[in-house]
Length: 312
Image 1 (cartoon, rainbow, N blue to C red):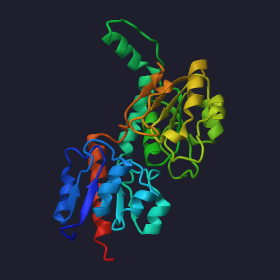
Image 2 (tube, rainbow, N blue to C red; image 1 turned 90 degrees about the horizontal axis):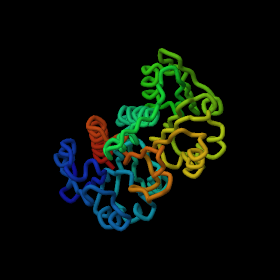
Image 3 (tube, one colour; image 1 turned 30 degrees about the horizontal axis):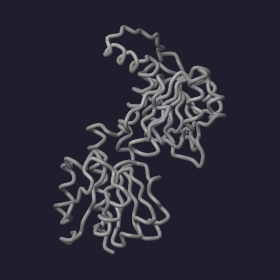
Image 4 (tube, rainbow, N blue to C red; image 1 turned 180 degrees about the vertical axis):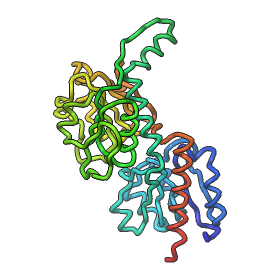
């Protein structure tokens, strides 16, 4: 059981204003739960102020650097309410003996559903037609149906597999690329694993569900290899996409549309790509559903208590 002075900081924006019933388990275990930056990500300076007094950190997507970790010698565990840890200096955490835990799979359904929603919204041009009608303009734009078309899924983990099944349910052919394909994943319908080159060449819509790499996966060469008129969706990581290459492809017609839910920083700096008429942007809401927040919060709390209650 935590000592009276043991503190746990909670910073995810979905939790830091109103809290969540699952957080009561931390208080019941004797921990003092802090909400240092309600409704927004903490800055580096704020982290340096609140983390030194904490043994646990229920963290959002804010960067957790070596400098920040060094200032918190009593920190024992960072628990993410999602799956991404690329914002955490994992080497520094390991050197300092800080466990880094994730809520694996908790937001998979929410992200998968958003990816499909963004694809459909783009192919049917829903945002511009909604905007036009709200401005009292009757503007009809011919769209495309997805049944009979090919969906390319890059990354076939927990999220990607759900996207595959949703695409098949819409009557699409689905081709997936994964660095380590699982031969036991054989959903009913027109599905198969393929190479990245083949996926780009044949997919009418491509959706990304893979971890970041050293360089963008969708760069100028990848865009040039895509089927003309394809639609691109990114609900994974901003670093997977070369924004300049995508903007050029939208301008010359190689891409019919792009949708993203992820950014290098939140909120992002204004840029030309986000204002393009065939780009849909959402403010990192993939896992921001009632159900996903519930699953992720409970998993994050369980991970905190599991690590903190292990005798040192």
